[in-house]
Length: 472
Image (cartoon, rainbow, N blue to C red; front, side, top):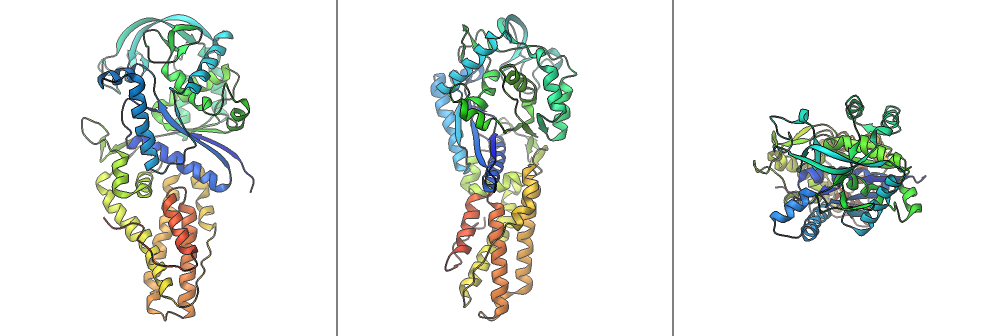
């Protein structure tokens, strides 16, 4: 099998709050794709981490009566703990307060300045601290930021600006030709729609913000948090200090994120990279938003779900399954939390767990040796769906097979056959072989479950063992 190079990233997550189910959703999806590529034999680098600079973080730290660095250290660890609890196979957890990242950003910004792509100017207008973004009058709803429902502050300050307009036509052409491939297709159309708007040069610095990375050419300014946060994708793999490693991984980067940060990733980021002489990312996938039981996720409503709570109740693999099986990845959808118990029992306890236990038990009770042999048949069947991030379809295919096997078990009733009969032995050997194939196909989604199934049916002596998913 020829090994490819695959570099996958999630957005880095703001440390001004605790991890929630939205962070888990994106990162589990990236983990599934990373594991699938590893299973294919590709060399994979999976990056996630935390975004730790900016006025919003400093403000949150102040409210918590903590110094910004202490606040970042504690909250960043919460994300790492949550991701470890979900059994995520990331290769690097980056923090934007890492010295390596700060040094890479300084080199990037200095290069832009030295070649004349950054110039000094004055920004006058509206700024939303919640978004960490400048906002226009036409974007307001009843005078407020539509996302944070707060009146933005009017500011006038010296900034440095990036000559975005010099690179817009090139970025637009690359998106049109899929040299920068944006998925799903509606997000590509949305990105191209931005070029019909009045896109202007944008600010890359803040004058009155202390918590950030100082500009190397003007220490009175810090790098605008969005500009330096985007650079985590290259600082983590060696931009500025390990050219060989950087070139190895940057040949095939794949960014996964939610749709609200489309402009920064699909327009600004490619333009910045082109300006410093680097290739833009090859692929970006922007998934939709979800509601919880029909309502927008909100702390005031009290429906923010902590992924750690789900793992404590259902286990890591079941939580991963419940998250990814709700609706097609990429679309907006609704997570029906009140149905988690029902879905856990029907799909996992009564479905997958049931057939694994029953078949292993029947083999244990059978006389004679049964040696199951798995295949790549099911993995190959879902391969196209996984590669296109159609995780919902892939997992549905796997669980359809599981349901069919349970149906066959009920129909054939091997427990009524003589324990040493050839008919019983052949039937159990075939079903056990199918379950080994299921374990391989399900590994990117539910790695621990896959391992347990494989170990159970690959053992010299197959025994019933403990139930995979005790009923709730």
